[in-house]
Length: 442
Image 1 (cartoon, rainbow, N blue to C red):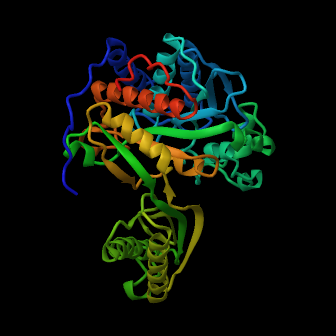
Image 2 (cartoon, rainbow, N blue to C red):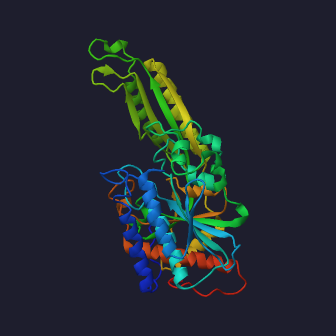
Image 3 (cartoon, one colour):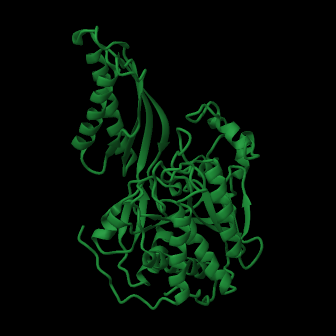
């Protein structure tokens, strides 16, 4: 697709909006250090850990400063509510996650939460109430940062999480989800209480770094997400036979690691041969018994398969698993693939997407539509309400890496576009013309 350029001179941005963008960046940076990291070397913030609690406490303070009433729900989601023009008004949800991968960047997730807070702060400064409430939500486990599956917290809020799903799920230290929740004063059996009534929610907006290079390559600070790719995740185990590294001849070996290596190459080959937007990744591997003088007897690894359509994803995963079976037969090992997550393709709502495009265009930016290959809480939230997503340019397209970087000016443009979005949404719910939100720029 050809590059898009700025379609019109950008509107004047009041100092308050420029300051809001810098504040977003400063707060994301603040959350990248102790005590908001579980690691002393780089950023790692897992769900239901001391770092998660510390981050929640800081964010709760910022929400309160912005004029919100703050609470934690039964799934540990932090929720800040800014009331609408009437107390019983339904809510627009604005959110993202605050957990991270290991050795993470500072903007993947928290950026969307901080942008939501700044939108509410602008409304609060203007003493402006809309025909809907706004709730800013900080989800806790989009990354699967502690447990083998992810998005428990957004699934609970969307009403798609059965408490029984948590049974038997443990972290790397063998701690069950139920015990981790209990340490926070929460009951796993009651996690369903976090589910929201669809009648009380009008939509969900998530802003997130692009995690790719397209916007930077085309000189655009923002992009509009059309949908999120379908994904399948598996835990794969390869069982061979451990043996002495010095005494077992090569032809008689059933080396689980050698078989796993063949599987990894098969994953890469199958995805490349399929073409299109299918991608497949092995990102984690454990070798047992893990001794230098022992032939590996067991290997466990992750498999992640994604595509823009469910059928393409399923076909790709099917071909990979067929290749695994062939490798198992050739090498005399047993290979099992256990599905741990199945998320269908998630298109964004056309009406909300149109409003978001208008808000972006009002900033002097030609709207650029993008499919998200990365998963987001928004894909879960489609079960509850219409969704929209805004991408923010990140330097070099780098994500899940300490080198993640977002310019304060781009954050300012994102705040202005999001305010323009909520203003347009408000006008669709009222008969008259709404007074412009301070700093909406359009």
